[in-house]
Length: 254
Ligand code: BTN
Image (cartoon, rainbow, N blue to C red; front, top):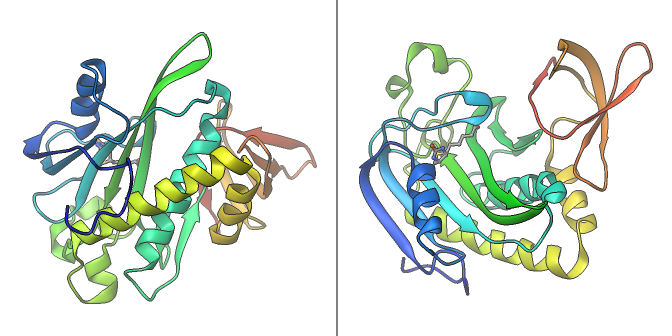
């Protein structure tokens, strides 16, 4: 990739025309010894995976469907921090390509004008609480037209092209994301989670607003107040009780 300015991330790239999921390819490659920063990109996915067991719509040639192999030297309990870090990197990269405000919905969905533009799926392998590797799967709806979306997605999903009215250079956006991520990973290694937490809080649209949370007991309503030092979301329920969420899903009510 011509515009690549990173030292490690994306220095090895595997590009495929059609795959089931770039996550599956990346898992296979890492088991075969692929190095940190190896990037798997596909023009089309036939079984793209989203969070919480959902499908990810990945039509041919219109989006960025990619999986990045990371080998962070952190223990498993810090994975939520990494989730937020990847979201900040992606938000900053996308923001450079569009004048509209891009916001992070906890934990790592990116929204423009209330509609989802991008999603992140982190899958990891660990042994004795130590992470062996993380596969960061990233889907960005770049140049999809409104009519490309199936009916059920039309109200809640959008693309950079729909919002901006101009095609966006996918390769440049990938290079921008990889650079942002490399810089933030270095910052995280040197200074820990505190600066990442501040950046995430500045970019999120999830704090201090009424929301619905999916918990083991079903959906409950509350207000998110903060992200803690582990990357967990603190939510106050109507009865005054505070709960911590490390993963899951929320729905903004306003
Ligand atoms: C979500 O918001 O639910 C996460 C979506 C992640 C989608 C990407 S596309 C590339 C990679 N391969 C997959 O199968 N999923 C991720």
